[in-house]
Image 1 (cartoon, one colour):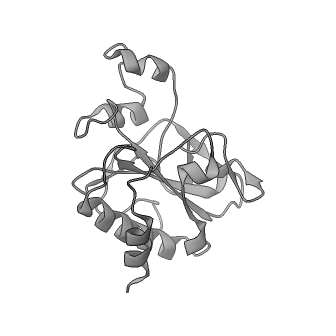
Image 2 (tube, helix red, strand yellow):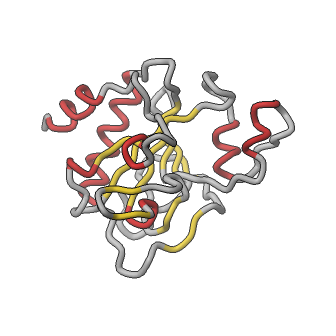
Length: 182
């Protein structure tokens, strides 16, 4: 992680317009893991990237109608092959969590980093994604010393009833076990 730029070394940088300043003196204390695929359940296209860049043509598919006008982003997107795209530098607030709560704190975007995995509630994630996620999480924890292991959650945990990702196929034991291994 480059401390000056807030960019991950080796990540493909595509700046999203869907971000803003974090509140003053706000430390990153939370990592939120998400899953996304566009079209739903399909992998490998450019529609997720277009969504985060604000360029998705919502007239292309009927299921995209509800995305029209949506302004959303994430810090990182990990593709099925493990490649990383970064949309928002760490110093800025990405719009990934929506209405959310962690403990007694609301507005999780203020103090979190979002990582989207290319995936869904219907399919397992790929080994390359876990390897990249672990490496990225380690880099984030080095760059953000207040980001503790117990502050790594799924979107479903901070937006219960509203969100289900990363879903039942995300192997938390595998991820946490590998993360804990030096």
